[in-house]
Image (cartoon, rainbow, N blue to C red; front, side, top):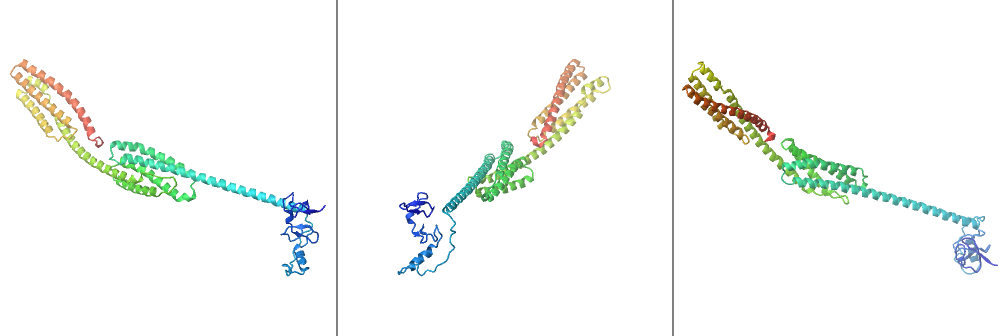
Length: 426
């Protein structure tokens, strides 16, 4: 039985078969048959697959053997190294199988490399997303602090505002620090390095602003506060510029455009506090002058006290005459009238009116006491002893009231003086 050899896999097939049952090659396409061993070969073969003879030389020899002109007749024959005739079809099949395996290995390696590339790309995307998310959280914290500053300080500042700011801003500053620490811990993608540096600078400026505002409110009178306000204005201008030019995807900072109004309000507040302080100083000077005069009057009143009652015993024993006693009473009365006149002429500052009025009232009672004692002495000198005794009892009762009230007055006066001569209480 005639057989044909598959030129691809060397499998023996029947002569009538068109395709190889092993590799599927089209058998009838094998157009180049070896003139030496009659082995069919593929059209592109240069050497016989069975014997290794030069198929091109065979074709040239065949062309020159016939009279018609052939396209290879004048072709120069180039001697090529023949394929080793010892290579068997099975060896060739094995070589092709090895080639297929190598191609498969290369394919697997390429797939692994592609997978690794995709994995690293995924990690890069995750790193970028986490960085941008952390940046957005930091920006949100800066915006929150801006909103609080605007809400509390874009209107005229009061003592309640100062208290609220002193309590709120330290908390905001701590929250900003935590957000900044979390953001710093994230790896910054190289394409965002410039914007990263800008956001870092803005965060530091915002931290400075949150520290400067309470410091200004705590020391509105200090000369150093003017320089602090100027520095605050510079920080706000830088913060506004950076925030408006920040270009990180999904990261926005609001409120910086309104921060300059905060510096203006702080300047107004400090100016107002300095005016108030000047008024307090003027009032303090007035109060100090008032209390110095009051102290002098009180001291003179204490020194002018006379024992009018004890002098009666000396008069009754004949040690002094009645005229001496009347002179003593008149002197005591005149001293108190003079002191009361000084009190009435005092320029009494606001808040000290009660001390002026009380001392004037007590001096008037003392003058009345002198009058009653003189009336009693006059009656006694006229031997109206019962009537005189009644006057002495009336005078003694009044004097007891005066002494008790005077003691209370001195206590209240000293306490008021201690309070009103401290500028922080004015």
